[in-house]
Length: 213
Image 1: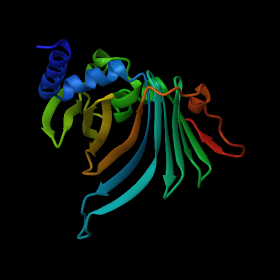
Image 2 (image 1 turned 60 degrees about the horizontal axis):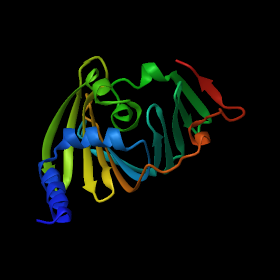
Image 3 (image 1 turned 60 degrees about the vertical axis):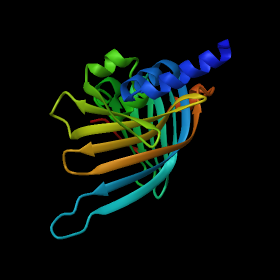
């Protein structure tokens, strides 16, 4: 058997056996930076005789591991979330309001820790119980359950795709304890792009109301 054929077969065998937990570990080790577009659908449960409601947003996402990321929500409302390594900033453009929290307090058991902020798998396992879920339509799934029951977050599912370019982030499903589900589907994912440092810097706009809880 030729060496090239053997390497191909080994690669196919790995993909066949890979599960969500292995994909997460590979993603954390190989994705030092990333950039993608996303569509987010937030669905609230039916209550008081009213049907379930959903809201769709679009934007883009960038990160440099560890501890720096940026979500830009473009439609229907502009909102920016920036982690600069020290502070987590949330800017609501319509309200011209900025909320600033110490990053170490804000990002423990959160979806952002799973996909961008945590340094390694051991750091995640301090805050989450992690388990592989069944593969579906070429996506490897992982379920993450917060170990602390004090927060609003119930569970997170993360989907990864193993492509010829490496392991890419595909989907993020967030369930909270109030029955609300938020699903982010990522597209045009770029693995390890060179991202300028200023992307992850934030300065409150002039006249903005800055809140520090």
